[in-house]
Amino acid sequence: MTVDLLVIGGGPAGYAAAIRAALLGARVTLAEEDRVGGTCLNKGCIPTKTFYKNAQVLNSISLAGDMGIELTGCFVNMPKMLEEKQKIVAQLAGGVEKLLKAHGVTLLKGRASFKNKNTVIVSCGGSKKELTAQNILIATGSLPAKPAVPGLDLPGVMTSEEILETDEIPKKMAIIGGGVIGIEFAGIFNALGSGVTVLELLPAILPVFDAEIVRRLTMSLKRRGIRIETGIKVKEIKQSGTGLTVVAQGSREELACDVETVLVSTGRKINVAGLNLEAAGVFYDGNGIKVDSNYMTSVPGIYAAGDVIGGQMLAHLAAEEGKAAVENMMGLKGHVNYQVVPSCVFTFPETAGVGLTEEQAREQGIPYITSKFLFGANGKAVTMREGEGLVKVIAREDNRELLGVHIMGPHASDLIHEGALALEHRLTAQEVGRTIHAHPTLAEAFLEAVLGLDNKAIHMIARRHDI
Image 1 (tube, rainbow, N blue to C red):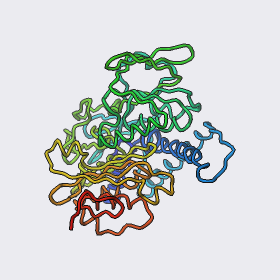
Image 2 (image 1 turned 90 degrees about the vertical axis):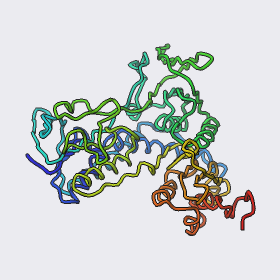
Image 3 (image 1 turned 90 degrees about the horizontal axis):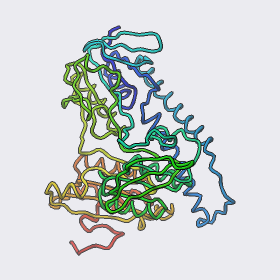
Image 4 (image 1 turned 120 degrees about the vertical axis):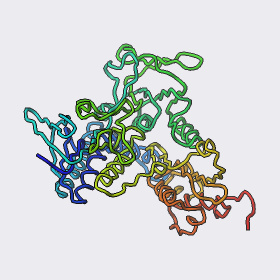
């Protein structure tokens, strides 16, 4: 069987690439050994957000009394939560399959492996199918990475994928890793009633985010009862009675944390096992498959995109890389701006950022200015009882071109796209400031922060008088 494009992997990079290629007129086959949608839809972003919504509802219930709503109590039904999560995942995965079918993409369920640089074998059960393609796109994603810590094989030690299947809420849990995944689960299980301890090797959680935002978020999480230990290395996990003990070493003393469950969230690794890339001559290392600016690998006609090429492992970035790879192989010019990639953390409150952090601007020697607007002064946020947090913008000092936007507060994951749009088109504070924002909305906080760069904000006290 010969096609124009064979896509290996049905996650965000793979299915987006397949549909884009079909829209451009290519005959496309997509090989996926599991359900389409990849880790994000089946074992990551989407199932996690269903749990996040449940936790959000619990947080809202805790505020009901202050809003004049009297409740007699509530009960967390974890098996029901799992059932609803599975329904949502199945619905969305089914939707992706329908999209592929509607665009004429042939879906092969099976594991793909290279026979040579021109031929791929897709195995499913006892059957095998050989395919050749004018172009091949590898989009096999990533898997949870585990550190070299004794005790990871003990019962109760889970990855981020495994904990999404648990039907019990642990009384106490330790999370190894204070990145996005670890901090999101910390907030979720804290809201569900678990005592949560986060153990992070680096000096701060969420190391890629703006340091000021991280400091504020860390304090907020601690006020909610989440214990956060930074600059600490986990040495081992031991069985302790009916539970587990996590032994860690800090800068001054050793820490022993007694828990029921341990979540290991120390990053992800590329998923290339079984692909037989050596037979195709595709070069890769532990950091990912090596590609050029067109997403072509070391072998002409074979491309790669998404988590499998390393870098920022984000579903939305993977989808853009997949589409750009297809456009490049079909004679167009794909566009991925790695300087403007929004990142979101679904915490309480939400956190998001795009563009340069203040630390990066300083390191690059860029003369910059910052402005901040607190959600406590935003009418919509106050009525929502979510006045904690702020919008922080960073701009060039000379012409006020926006360089970075960082948000901690309600719906930060939605608001950040206004910042991303501004950065992508290199808008200045003056240009953003001319855009009327509806009242009362959370988006006004972004406008006020931007106006504050020139001391034109109405709802904050100006630092000096400018005419």
